[in-house]
Image (cartoon, rainbow, N blue to C red):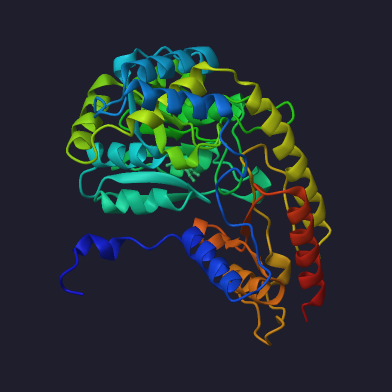
Length: 400
Ligand SMILES: Cc1ncc(COP(=O)(O)O)c(C=O)c1O
């Protein structure tokens, strides 16, 4: 449509939202559908956090907040970075946004000029390339492999960097693969970055608190202090505190960048919801035992799903370090005939046939830039996960 902006031709709609929508439509028609597409914890927000919001409303904390966030939250964020990541950020180096999404968008908006490149490892969270493109930049991709645990290697990073590279996006633990970088793996990437002073790092640590076993989370500015001055460390309360609907994300970095992001946000949405900010103060400063309880539950689910998927014919499922996703390969099933009679030519076909035949909704890997794989979100009950994996086993066994 001629009326719409040219920028729209540079973006595509979210495949994860499309799958969720398709599953919803089938459910509405009475089909028994198990949706494993959603990227949010199935737990409720803890009561202490809800109560902090209710008290904030009662106190009359219902006015416009400062654009970058209320002082107690910026303070809590600075303390969080110091306590959990050994990172020394002053409150004026922090910014609060309406979800991690807004933080990322504004960081790109504040920094990208036409033709600037942003290196994004594949598989990636669907929004990164679209945000970069909307802000006028060029997403460039650095492939990972299952053999490397879906993690960017120093060699692949070196190859991906050009004189036009402005940012490297790191996301650990990753959506969609669950891969998380060890300190040694970050060290190897940092050594490459030190050779390229024009490249900044945007590290999306959203899933920091969801790592399993004895994995120790590290973030890149902590591992290499010489990158601190060109790193934006992003995080949020959505996943760790089961607060996806409260829409609070945050970041810390060099003051000039934070000021630029503040300026953009001031002309856009202004400060994030005051009440949700007060709830987030409690999330960051209050008791943290909820996180350990959830981690244990997620770890049990991960182990269940990985084990059951590896028993499904033609599926290979690595056991990732974190988040609540697995990213199995369906390469062993390409070329087989699905129940509809159609030959499965790629992961998109595999997911479509699976949904049609067994009512299990998962997202095809090509949407995340690396296939033939698919993403399962295990943020749902063990009973449902067991049923879904049983259906996947039955489906793969039935393929011709
Ligand atoms: C890797 C990653 N970053 C950022 C976000 C956005 O988080 P928020 O809901 O706080 O906007 C998500 C949400 O799915 C995500 O998976």
